[in-house]
Amino acid sequence: MSTLLAIDNLDFGYGERAIFSGLNTDISGDACIALVGPNGAGKTTLLRLAAGALTPNSGKVSLEGKSLHSLKRSEIARSIALVPQEIEMPFPFTVEQLIEQGRTPFLTMFGGLRAQDRAAIERAMTLTDTHSLRTRIFNELSGGERQRVKIALGLAQQPRLLLLDEPTQHLDIGRQLEMIGLIRALRREGIAIVASMHDLALIEGTFSSVWLLSPGEPMRQGPPSQMLRQDLIDRVFNCPPHHGPVLMKRMQEREERAL
Image (tube, rainbow, N blue to C red):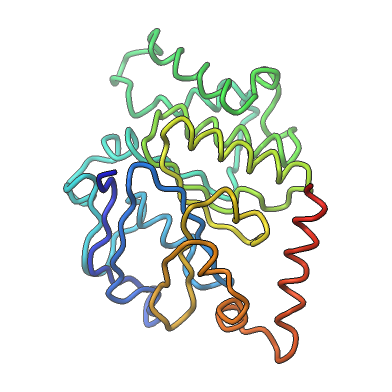
């Protein structure tokens, strides 16, 4: 599969604090990547750089050979959707009204929703099983319902690359498994996915690759079987001596409960 998004020699930081230095990686059109690392390692920052929401200090991010810096926001949004951890809604939008906002990059200045826009919205709700929520107020939904609606908002953009920032955060085990099932379904739809993940037990069997971030070190990349080894997890998450096996045991227990 050809490269969809390429990150070339990227440097980025906040003030004096460097987050990435000389980062090189790419995302193919069939990728399903778990982004893993401790808090502050740059997971959200990397997703925002990949979406063009942040500009690198040097280096570049390219969408099919075109620098994101040279593209309009609407052009990027037609190919890349970023689903953040939280969406603040100051107005009592219904679920359907919120998902409709995903069609904004495709609308003309004074044009309304067209037939193809409505079809994209319905498809997004079908994939996320949110039809039954369409008349509900977004701010009144449960955590799991909100997560599905946020992803539907991203899918309404009909993206080729979906960037998910902690999609299983604050969800109970049942809703986490629902989310993993959704990610697998989106893979079957041919959508490339990069998702930052805290629960390591949910990665194996769903994600084909892991990007492992550790402050002050180059990003490691590889299949889950290599990136989730206990020695690496101990080092990246700075586990206290003799406590690393506790983390791996918790991963195993989570997997057993999910069966």
